[in-house]
Image (cartoon, rainbow, N blue to C red; front, side, top):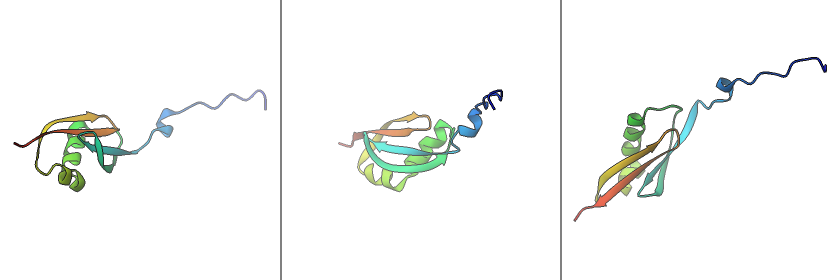
Amino acid sequence: MHRQSWPAFDPALAAEKEITLVVQVDGKVRDRIAAAAGLAEAKAREMALASPRAKAALDGHIVDRVIVVQDRLVNIVTKRRS
C-alpha cells in the first residue's frame, strides 16, 4: 500500500456546472438566478435585466450601468428620474 501513487487531481471533475448568479440593484440583493457556469457577460446582463424581481426594483429608475462579475453577480446601477 505504501508504494501506491497518490491519486491525481482533476480540476474538470471539481468544477461546478451550475452557479447561482446574484442580481443586485444599487447594491441591494434583489434576486438569485441559477445559470450555467462560464455564462457570457452579455447573457448574464440579459438574464438579470429580465428578472421580474429586478424589474420591480427598477420601477421609476433609469439604468446607468450594469456591472458583471463573472460567475458571481450582476449589479445594476441606476439614476433616479427627475
